[in-house]
Length: 377
Image (cartoon, rainbow, N blue to C red; front, top):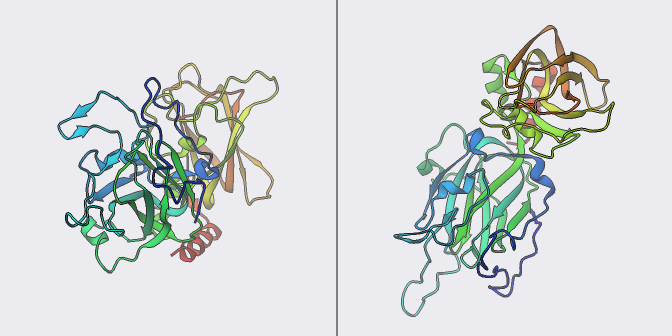
């Protein structure tokens, strides 16, 4: 693990943010620049992520950690317990007696997060937005892999082994604190710890989904590019309004920005595109392209190409085809297309809400996935 922030380890108040000055609460927010944030958030609520337990949430509920929108701040918002914050905030810890008023060095608060899509964690963001003097002095993160649907009590049992991804590390208040993770193991749950107490606005767990090969085999035909099944966004010509990863999220789009939309293209004879890697080599049998909620800004035409291997030649899966706004389009392929990557072209620009590639893993793809899964256990 390497941290991408440089907080002080000496002065316990060196990382404080200034008291709220009024006006825009994000004016003095300290943003980070982390290369791993293009990867999917494995803890995303849209994938099934949840904060399943916490030892304390006196001031603010644990569930706020995984909300998708940036944390909001209302300086006048107070409740019967005190200031209401948009995050997870615990009460102030105290020592054992009047002679030991500070908590013991090992005292800390914790929350357990179930990843919506188990996989390889590549980076973690601990966001302390609006927690200026009440953020934790240090944070740590552990991870584990437990099969099935374990209860909080099962996860807290003595026989569950947790691997340390982030050792206790100072963080900054009112800031994005990022940590690059190098573990090669597949995880299902994380434990976020505050040392000794405090508040955290949001948690993001970026990585690569690694599904169970046996589960995909049982399902038969699957969406080979779905985030939940291990599909990955690799590159795009434009991501001005939203991340192309949203094209391969589960479920249907709920509003206009819940998909991929690019800027208006002004250069003739060019077009926008996005490239994805399938979970493994698969045989695509049918394709769905959905422009839900994209009414005056959907792609005019699309085309879909496939490639088998990192250096294979691109071949046509769907020729250039007119799209309708706010419509689900279904394409029955005349012959299955064996591929490891696909490229979706939008002509000349515009948005796509969702794409589904229905098919099955090939024998080569199944063997590849089983090898990756076994190496990460």
